[in-house]
Length: 262
Image (cartoon, rainbow, N blue to C red; front, side, top):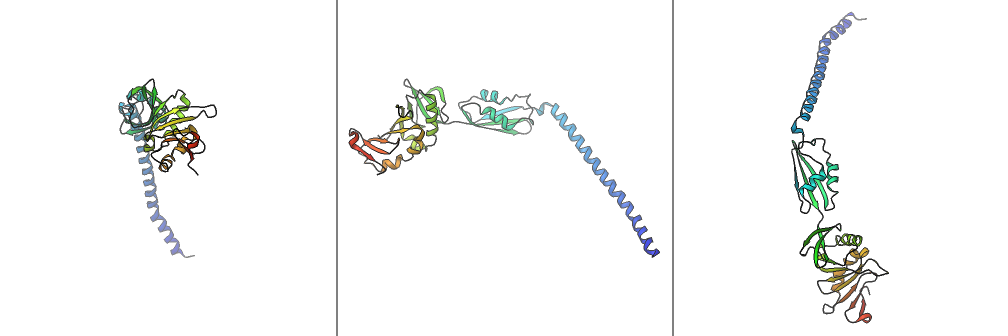
């Protein structure tokens, strides 16, 4: 056994001991600093939550036309100076606002330190309901607004639509059409028959009449421009879209029928 080698080992260990102690001291200091920082952060959070600045100071509403700011604020259940800013649940608040049948989508944003903004997307006007020569807006989801209006080119006029459920289905079908196709329709009458409670009749701006069924209306109506392009523009009549698609010229009855898929 080499005595010199043993002495070298002892010296090396003695030299490392101060370094090990220093490393342990540094680790302990880091732990202490982390603990102090965490402690003060907790204190600051507690103090912040007790201060007025932690509460929502203002709510800004944008995008609304038919729904009042007061209604939106009531649905959101946000109260200035009372509602906690950081604990405010974005998704739940949006869902509360969207309970209003005029609101299609609500989007809540938090603005530091304590402000809230709510952007509203309302259902658009898709048609006009006629009642006793008075007109009311019909929205995408079938809701009828209470105020009287003057119809414009936003959509066709619905006549004889006393059945609310059918009206909702009709609005859903209209929503699937392009804007130009909707604007080509002047009036839509609800004309149910025993064999088809969904039967409707349309008066077009180009002079044609269309018969169709609510449940298949959107899909069938998309073929309308193509059908009209194949007809003699000087001869107007009824385009039937219920089952088989065919054209029936005015005043010619059955003898004037022409199948469009022939």
